[in-house]
Length: 299
Length: 256
Image 1: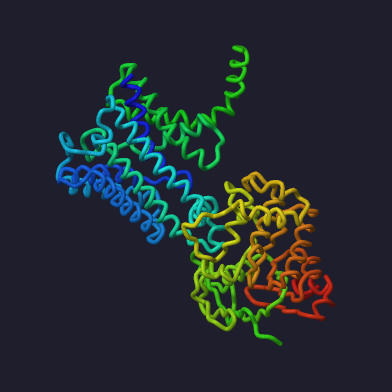
Image 2: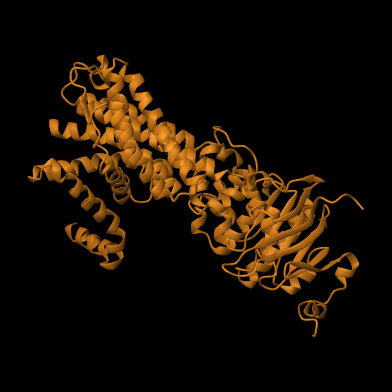
């Protein structure tokens, strides 16, 4: 039971990451590698500030700002310096590694015994692991509602149009460079926020905790899409969180099968590869047809 | 006559093909465009028609010369800023609309062409009645599909939408780049009729590139022939009305 609750809590916290990546990967339609640097940056900023006695809320908000600045740099390298977006992301991600070490002053930083968002007063008295579920619910609701609101504004619509048809967006007077910078910046801010939360949930921050993060965040997005199918934009954002929770369940099962935590990156990649190749195989082996027939017979 | 709306003054655009001689794809082009002009533009491939539009739209910086809007120099004005007075329809239906956004969302975006966009709620529902009315101008069921992503529309519907988007907020100048070329003859002539009617009703200033000699003769009050980056002919008024296809063939091949 507590394993399931913990998985839901983690799914909610990591869902923040999925939503952050959704802004670039799905809406702007490009892969942003910066996240591998901004996720541990969020963790580093939060951990460093909390150990220096700042309030966890301030530390978490500063993590968002730090990630947003790193994202903005990627955006500027891409739009102004005309460096391909993949390389821009890798440059900032690599640079962030050193920055994160500077921020923490060490390769990892423990939060044991320090106050953080998860042991805040309002969560005390809850059964084990329920604090992460509640905190996750609060944060994911705020982030999702904020993104949905943003996408329904004139600016948000211009942002979607930039990713959908850049040429058209320009011909309607939308400054697409500004939109891209805005998108990458906010996206990485949200991802750093996720990093700050995960570090507080784990009780430590580690400079290597960003490795493979992009796969984890993509997995939330893709699992949500594969499981829930055709949705409107707003529904898709909620599907990301549900996808993130499902992904945690899959990992839970895998761990129960006897794999250990070191295998998780391999398993995450395999899961993502399977999910992403599903549409291709669907046509090839007529998968949907076979599934349907199997279901019909049962009934 | 009245003052020109838009002027090109001795505009040169030089390109340097890989290893080749520098080439003037626009070669000292000067033209005055007057309010209400409907100019059809002919020219063989490589004559500089698209360059001409890209220079006006700001997509291509010019090598030398000057662009004036109402007498004001806009040579250095960005593409985004120029959309305040300018709108365009491209040949490829895919270029003019955002495929994952619905018809209504596309129209809403276009209605704010050239304006600053803020964190203000978009109020899409409020505008639906108006969009229904605008899209029912052609009988191609576009008005029944306001909530459909434009990627699911036919080429004809998408191109109609592109045109409606270009005119939903009245542009001071409208550039049509072979906007009916990718459509079947029927759809093409329907859209051309709508184009002509809209230009008349809204008294738009319009430049239209076309390969249809018939359209070039039938529509507009002025006809340009571009050749090798230069304006070969600029025929207007009664003289343009009297032009025949034979005359046009002559422009392209003087021996004919």
